[in-house]
Amino acid sequence: MAEKIKVLLSEEEVNKRVLELGQAISKDYEGEEVLLIGILKGGVFITCELAKRISVPVSLDFMSVSSYQGTQSSGVVKIIKDLDQAIEGKNVVVVEDIIDTGRTLSYLLKYLGNRNPKSMRLCTLLDKPDRRVVDDVKVDYTGFVIPDEFVVGFGLDYDQRYRNLPYIGVVEFED
Ligand code: IMP
Ligand code: MG
Image (cartoon, rainbow, N blue to C red; front, side):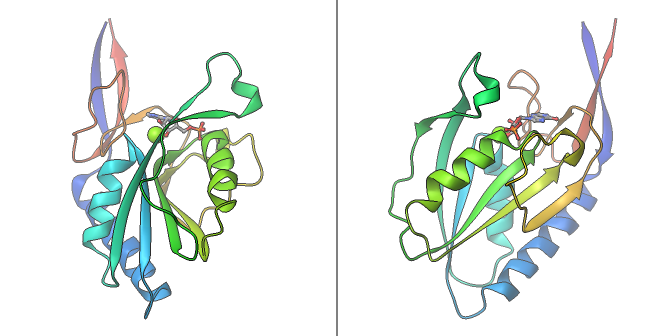
C-alpha cells in the first residue's frame, strides 16, 4: 500500500516554535545549567534543535526505552539504554517527540525522579491530549497540541521511515 504525506506543520512553523521553546527554557534557567535528556530515537531531532536555541550552559544525554509487548496497560517500559551520567542535583529537562497515551513518560518520570535531580521538567514537540490514559504527566514545554492523527517527521517515524523529514506530516494511505 502506497502512502502520501500531507504537511501538518511546515518546516518554518516547527523551527519558529523550537526557537520559542529554547528561549522559554533559557529564561526559566537563567544563571543555571540544564541537562537535556533526549528519548531515542524520535526525540533526537527535537533535542538537538532545541539545544542549539538554549543560551544557558547545556549538556546532553540520551535514553532508549520500549514498551513491553502485550502488557500495554501496565505502563511498564523496558530501558534499552540508560543514561551515561548521574542526574542527582541537576536541572533535568526530558525531551520527547510526542506524548500520546503518556504511558512511556509516566514511567520514565518516576524512574528518573528517584535519582534525585535538582529539578525535572518535560518538553515535547507534539502533544495529543485526546489520547492520554494517565493523569500524572505534566508537560512544561509543549511545541504544538495536535489532533489524534498519526504523524511523521522531525524524528517521528512510520515503520522507521520519515524521521528525517524537516516538517511534520500526516500519513495518508492510498491503494
Ligand atoms: P506513549 O505516550 O507512551 O503512548 O508513547 C509515545 C510514543 O509513541 C512516542 O514516543 C512515539 O514513539 C509513538 N507515537 C505516538 N504517536 C505517534 C505518531 O503519531 N507518530 C509516530 N509515533 C507516534
Ligand atoms: Mg518516541
